[in-house]
Every structure is written in C-alpha cells, then in structure tokens.
Length: 390
Ligand SMILES: Cc1cc2nc3c(=O)[nH]c(=O)nc-3n(C[C@H](O)[C@H](O)[C@H](O)COP(=O)(O)OP(=O)(O)OC[C@H]3O[C@@H](n4cnc5c(N)ncnc54)[C@H](O)[C@@H]3O)c2cc1C
Image (tube, rainbow, N blue to C red):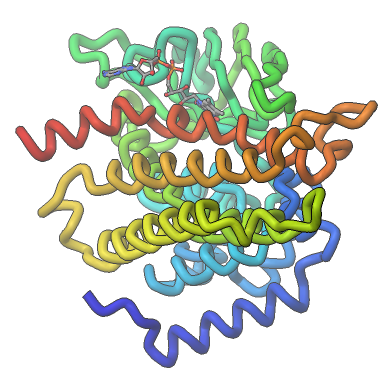
C-alpha cells in the first residue's frame, strides 16, 4: 500500500503545522515536551484555540461544530498535534461522547451538548468501570430506577479519570435486570453537581491524581439525559469502545517521545560522552522507530479501508494492543535515559515540581496503565483469538 500524502493532504499538514507554530503557547508546549500531562487550564486554552479554527472535533460534521475532516486529514491533524507536543482535544468529549451522540443522540441533545463538548465548556468524564466490573463491564451493578420524569441512580464507579475536574459524566447504569447481562443497561448523562455525588481521589503509581472513585447515592437524573433507548446502552458502549481503542494507538505520540529520547540522550554526560552516540542505544532507537512505522502503516491501512472492520474483525484490537506495547517500551527507554536523576523529586512534589528527568519517570509509570485502560491487553488478545481462530 502506498502511503505518501497527496499534494492536498501535504498542504493540509503544512496548514496544521503553521497553526500550531503560531498559536500553541510555548509554556504548554514545553510542559508536554518534558513529559507532563496537560493541566486542565492547558487543555481548555488549547482546545478553544483549536475550536476557533474549527479543528477541536476533527471528525464531526460541520453542522455540529466539527471540522468534517476525512479520515486521512483527521489522522494528519492528530499526528501533528502529538508531534508538536500539543494537547489533544479531550477524548472523553470528542472521540467518545461526541461520537456516541452523533449516532444515538436526539437532535436536542446534539444541539445542546456538541458545541459545549467541542469548546470544552463542559468537560465530561467516563463512568463505566465499577469495582468488580472492568473487563467484564456488562456485569455492572449501578442501578437507575425510573421515577416519573427522573431516574434515581445508586452505585459506585471507579478509576474515573478527571472526575474531580469534570462537569458531567456519561455513565452506564442498569435500568433492568435482564437474562443476558448486556441487556437492561442504559447510557445516561449525569451532571456532576447533582446532589448525592461524592468524588474521592485515587493517587496512581506516577504520584499524580488523575483517577477517582465516584459514589452515587440517590442521584436524580432527568429522563431527557438518556442517550439512545432505555436498556440499549450496551450498543452505545460498544460503539464508543471501538473508537477508544483506535485512538489509543497514538502513533504521533510514539514519534514525539522517541524524538525526545534522542534529545535527552544528546546531553553530555560525565566525561563528555553522549548516550546518543552509543551504538547499542542507537540500535534500540532504530528498532523502536521501525516498529512505530509498522504501526503507522497498519493504522493507515485500517482507518482508510472502510471495509476492513468487516473483513478483519478485531483490527481495532491490533491497534490498541500494539500501540500500548510501543508507548510502554518507548517510555521505558526514556526512563533509562534519565537514569538515577529520574528518581529525584523536588521538595514540593507534584506534577509541576518535577524536573525533566523526574517527569520522564513519572510518565513511564503512568504508561504502565496503557495496557489496562480502554480494554486490557489480555482482553484484546482474547478478542483477536476469537476473530482469527473463531
Ligand atoms: C489509568 C486508568 C484510567 C482509567 N480511566 C477510566 C475511566 O475514565 N473510566 C472508566 O470507566 N474506567 C477507567 N479505567 C478502568 C479500566 O477500563 C479498567 O481498569 C479495565 O477495564 C480493567 O478492569 P479492572 O481494573 O476491573 O481489571 P480486571 O477486569 O479485574 O482484570 C484484572 C486482570 O485480569 C485480566 N483479565 C480480565 N478478564 C480477562 C479475560 N477474559 N481473559 C484474560 N485475562 C483477563 C486483565 O487483563 C487484568 O490483567 C481506567 C483504568 C486505568 C488504569
């Protein structure tokens, strides 16, 4: 398969590069380059700037505030953002909920929520996982009982990324006990300011607070916040999870981190030598680069062929699996480049206080989770085994 950009795609890529060069605040670029996750204000600032250009929701139709980009241009945009150390549009808003609303939402829901999702006026978190219901998501037990024009929701969510800074949550809840556990699940939009919601932090192994437990006690949710049909939320969840798996194979991020490894390894060490000149290290960089290129070609093949999902079921799992493995290997390489300096923390610990090497090691720890969230690697292998072997 020939994978060169045609002249119009190359012109689009150049347009994106110029936009990022002219608009991305240097402070944000430098933080992300050092390996920090974007802060809330970084994401809001940048997503709104992207939105002024119409690029905050690359694949949505223009009538709903998206860029209406074809798949190739969408890939180019995402890739260039990663390569330039720019934040991505928030996936929960744009790739997950936005995608679901476009397919299953009512016209009123689309008109109300989509512009706010694109402009990050509302930040959504994802309330799917529960204690005991992660890989086996359909076993979830959070209940929503219909009471007139409201649902009364009771239960617990866990590992909810950014729940502490989110305005709303899209959640899977059980509205009916059905014979098949995938049935009787509904997809609800819940205002995080509703009485009865408690958010408790979980600090992860990278020393940061991204994750939370969310407790829902008699939370009243208007019936108009149901997306799709009552009891058919599993359809929305499946549709969303494929999109999540594809977006996890972030090739541009792999290239950017490899480039950063090369930059850090170019610093002079004691005795004046540089790690980047070491033949073994160079070999490792080259081998990882070859793997990233293979993933890149595979991603393009998948995303540009509309029939491949049908002819090769499980293909999204290939991207999720391989993308997770590669970013883990690359961030492990970066942690080795930092060496002992990476274990040092400044006095006031916290994301902003980490120096470049410590941020690298913190990021290494963060990426151990890449093979867990969005469906663990073992589960992706199960899906592939079923797809290939039947
Ligand atoms: C950093 C991070 C962010 C997350 N963010 C969110 C979020 O925002 N919203 C949300 O809803 N969830 C989120 N999650 C939760 C995530 O989706 C779950 O952790 C994941 O689905 C795994 O579920 P679990 O943790 O319950 O592990 P389990 O499902 O209990 O799995 C435990 C182990 O058993 C293996 N295993 C399970 N089933 C099988 C099987 N059938 N075959 C082979 N092996 C199997 C798994 O691979 C894993 O190694 C996040 C998780 C992490 C780590």
